[in-house]
Image (tube, rainbow, N blue to C red; front, side):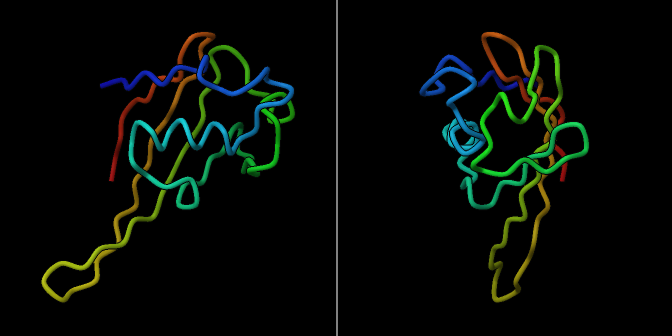
Length: 100
């Protein structure tokens, strides 16, 4: 199911708002720390300091996000790779197909 993440909550216009700001919005809705998120757009890893404009995000574009989560289960360390595809729209960022 889709998870809407309002782009209107970015702190500024796309030429000022950064990928880190985007990661913080994703964190508010997923509880995945920005430090654990890796975001790609058009097969290119987006750096935290890039602006939304520099990243080239556009209406209808799909962002790929992955996060490696680690946990301890009864003394056994486990790692879970979470992948999500997010779609850009003017009013929201919608998540689709969270997979592990």
